[in-house]
Length: 278
Ligand code: ATR
Image 1 (cartoon, rainbow, N blue to C red):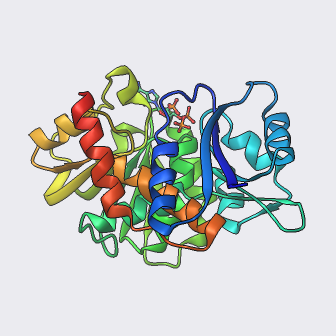
Image 2 (image 1 turned 120 degrees about the horizontal axis):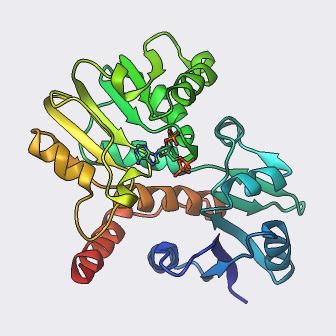
């Protein structure tokens, strides 16, 4: 029997993870099967248990189960413990469930792939929800000179900055606040709010971008998000989150198979499919 993996979510119909992991498996020649499973909202733990009983070896976890997955893990990576969420489950040889979060490393790898230097850069992150909590640690590890978290609810941003202060090695001015506290220009602006889903834009100053700045939206779609359109009109380079999706998947694949897939051809494949659908 092939090794079994899956992605859990609710809903899950539009997930690209099966396509991504199947492409990775073809690349590596691994005999594995990867499916999408819609877990019941009130029994994620039961869905994981059933999957393991049927031979499942590991899984990705997406909305709305990342916090519940975190709670059921018997062993956690330090970065998952700090993020408070898990997007990767691995069934250990001893039968215990290990949890990791690969979203943040996926973001940092994709930024690097696009030629963005984070060390010494001024970085602004918009939003302070679960998605942002998962990316702060790897961003901080790159040593930006400033890392500001700005959010509609200012206290959540200041709280998040405080939560990660102990990981700051002194290179970074790490702080949080409301959108009205955003001042000066930034080299990298990352949208981690869910505002684009509703076509909304956080209220931000027009002179937000330093020369050569990159605007990154953790969302993606067939067309650029409102945030990216807004940013490009103000002189920034716009990058969407499709590459982050592929990179986080590659890191999950590594956790399961101890092999690093080549992400570039898979990203191209997805980009073409997305363009054809738009
Ligand atoms: P996720 O897991 O995707 O991060 P979340 O934890 O619900 O989801 O967080 C959503 C984030 O988007 C929050 O930072 C939220 O701001 P608040 O903390 O003030 O609620 C932000 N957000 C959602 N809709 C928004 C909007 N229309 N404008 C600005 N920010 C918005």
